[in-house]
Each structure stands twice: as C-alpha cells, then as structure tokens.
Length: 223
Length: 229
Image (cartoon, rainbow over all chains, first blue to last red; front, side):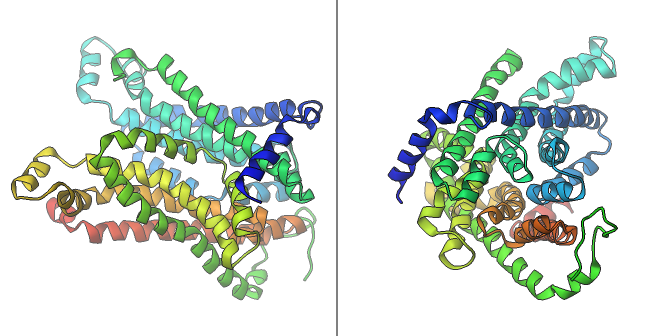
C-alpha cells in the first residue's frame, strides 16, 4: 500500500456517513477525547500554575521543582496507565492519572522559569508603586511571564490530546478507540482515519493557543 | 509460575520473577536503547546542518519551525501507523524503522529549534571577532558559532532523548516496543511485576542517558568550567 492508497482509504472511512452517528460515531468519540484531555489539563494546571508561580516568586525550591519535573517526564505514560488499570480497574480515574502526570511537568517548569526570569527592574517598579508580594506576583510577574506560561500550557495540551489516544487501550472511549479497535480487527482504514482525526485535533489545539496568546498576552509584550 | 489478580493477595512485585527473566530483560533493554537512541543520533545528523542552513538563510527558519511544531504535536501511535506500510510490523530488522523513523521526526522537532536558538545566542562581538580574523561565513558558523551553541543543542538532545526512551514503549501496541512489551504482557495477565520492572528500567535508562549527555556537554565545553574558577 502506498501513501495515495492510505489517503484514499482514510478519506473513504472519514466520509462514510455510518461513522458520523451513534455511540461509536466520530462526534461522540471526539467529545469523549476532548473531555478526558480537558479534565486532565485543568487538574494539572490547578496543581502546576500556583506551585510554579509561588516557587518562581519566592525563589525557593526551584532546583527541586526542575528535578521532579525532569523525573516525571521520564515516566512512560503507557506503563503508568496499564499499571494503574491493573492495580485498580478500568475507568476514568486510571486514565486521567497518567495524563495529569504527563501534563504537569511542562506547565510547572515553564511557569517557574517564566516568573523567575522576570526583570528585577519590573519588580522594583511594582514595589515602588506600592504593591506588596501577592500584588507584585499577580499584577506584574504573572502577566510578564504569560508568554512562557502559555507555552507550557500549549505543550501540555498537545501532549495530552495526542496521548489520550492510548486511553482506548485501557478500555474507555475517545478517538483512540478507532486506532486500538482497528488494529485488533486489522481494519486499517479505521486506524489511519482515527490517526488523522487525532492529528487534526492536535493541530487545532496549536492554532487555538495562537488565538489565546493574542487574547491574553499584554500588548506591550508582543513583538 | 503462579499468577493471580493483583487484589487476590498477589504482591505488587514478585522479586523472583526478575531473577528468572534476566536474559529477556537484558535483550529487551538493549533493543529498547537501539530503538530510542538511533533516532537521537539520526536527529542530530540532520538537525545540525538544517539548523546551520536556517541560521545562514533566515527566511528558511519560520517555515521550518512551523513544520517542527506540527510534528511535535503528532500522536506517536498515529505516526507509527503511517510507516507500517513501508517498513512492516514486528520486532527487529526492517520493522524497527517503523519506530525509528517517526521518533527521528520527533527528535527533529525538538533539536532543530534548539540548534537555531543556540546559534543565535552567540554574542555579536564574538561573531565580529571571527570575521575580523578572516573567517568566512561557513567556517565561522562551524568553527566558532557551533561550539558556542553546544549547551543549547545538548539541552535539546536531553529533552529528545528522555521523551524518545519513554515513547518507544508506545510501539508495543504495534508489536515492537522494547521494554514496553512487558507492559502489555503484564496487563494481559493481570500481573503487575513486569509492568513495574519495565517502568523502572525505562526511567533508569532515561536518567542514565541524561547523565551521559550532561557529561558530554562538559567534555565539549571545557571553557565553561574554566570560566567559573
């Protein structure tokens, strides 16, 4: 099979009306996929954003944060997923835990590096305007660090969306179902079609972050 | 061998299993390293000239960076699938390239931006001094700017190596995942020991490779240490 056949098969699969309705239809699987991804990303952000900002602001514990994040990055997500499923059971929680472990390090490190790297003159100016610790952090340091923080969130979001595919291997839904089930049934068009959908989703997430960046980053920081 | 469900009084890890399988573990570890590190090697071989080109002709960089960003966002499993028709499925021989080629593309998405950033981090006075000493553009790039860029390039190689070592295990879903084979093996038998052992080995491989790259950086940039004394 060559590339042209692959594209043709995937196109036939993607445009078949039977694949666009019901519980195994593309809209439903897409929503499931987005749901798991968003849940994992939000939880990871709730952990990593405050922690990273605090460590970057106080300057204490930076080495520990970077070390733990690097260690977490080396954990194989698939192994963690299958381990959690084997120890507990099939369900949403065992799928979300590895995705959180995947999403937390980039958000944590970028938030920490971003807040830590804010020009001391800016902090002095904020202090001179009468701001205290929390005010300096929220009104000066976080806005200035925003491009880096968003980069961390984008990296995490892309990795989660791409990796949520393996959730299907642990028996729940999402776009990975097409790939895992297709492999099991040797239904190659389903595998390629599912892969194309995940790739499209990852590209859309990247574009979404370009938009978010435009909306959130202060105009003075854009060049 | 007796196997039971994890909740049926079965310990999380059976130490005797490790002793019984040292041969298999060694083979899988060696294969895992091959699948994970060849892509980094190939990635460096392609990324350094590509980065030099992007630094020399700046208009090349934005499109290259765009491609790198898209590559980075691709799901590894999906990318493995795309190469099955060309290299086949299974473990060893030609089929290894079904894993190695996609992982090389991933490593490029990290390495190329780092090579370019590293080259751009070279201070202008250094560049001017090299020009004043009669270096042409190409010779200056290779003999002056590239060595100065080494720390940034290696920082990229560290990220690429750690994620490559972790991503190889996803290949097990198409029958070629090095130590990842043990994930599926343990999962299908409800037996946690192989999963834990292979996770620990993969993390250890990642940490060791990271250490080797840090040592390589020290060797390649002796002036960095001399400067702090």
